[in-house]
Amino acid sequence: MAKSSTPQANWAAEEIGFLAGGPGRAAEAALARLMDGGLVRFSREGLVTAVHQNGHGATSPLEASILAGLSGGGRPIGLVVGPAAHSQEMGALHRNLVEKALAHRQWGKTSGGRVALRVLLVLLGIAFLAAALFVDLNLLAVTLVAWFVAFLLRDKKMLTPIGRGVLGHAQRNPRSRVDAVALHGLRGVVGRRRVADLYGLPPGILYPPPVHHHGKQKSHSDSVGCGGVHEHHNCASSSSCSSSSCSSSSCSSSSSSCSSSSCGSSSSSSSCSSSSS
Image 1: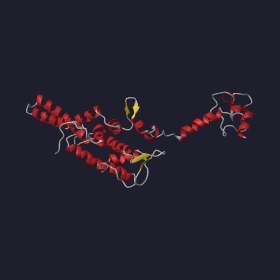
Image 2 (image 1 turned 45 degrees about the vertical axis):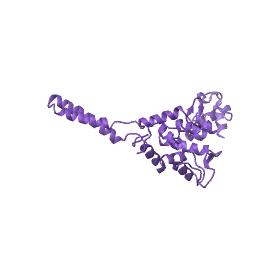
Image 3 (image 1 turned 90 degrees about the horizontal axis):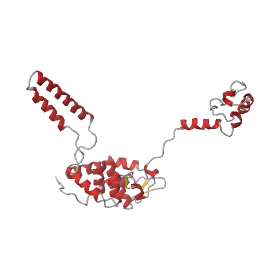
Image 4 (image 1 turned 180 degrees about the horizontal axis):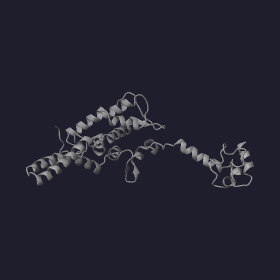
């Protein structure tokens, strides 16, 4: 196993990205390296496109996988970073960092079964401790064993001490804007400047536009229409006249459908008939 005892300055940006933020950050760092090398670019529609369709120019298997994914045309950044973060090349990058003693083999959130086992061992330890105090002191050994196993199953830090040293060295000595992406992500901020600004990327590319619900838009337009220009002579200036009180169904030939409280004037019957027409 090849181990690195001291921080170095020749770590790839995707390696620094993995140490700083995991697979997703490593994928963003690889994409930033491709942008920095002029191998990919963003179109006006916000799609990531490959400048060349031959796939040449990649400096790592992860970069090559990103270029291969762009061979069929442009894609949104989420459909570029996401598959790269879960690719076989990302798994190989993780294993390489483990072999270099920079990261632990287990990466990510602790599984539910592991947490449940720890809780069970702690509870068993408490039960055996109570039994040892009141029944048999020999059960105290079982308590210690259960708690020791629960301690071994505790959540470990993702990085080894060597990995934390390498990451700290990279944070103190950033080399380029690619390192800024690796350390902070494309959505991060360095000082008071957005990292995306280093590549001239507008916010709309990284952050999807808000989703408008058509139901809410309809209710908003209906409420405005009742007090708008077309029906101002029917509903006067009263704010209580909503879309339900002056709709086409309520404004019939009957004068009671639009009362003076909702439409404001004594000539409501004539206004309702005119609006229904």
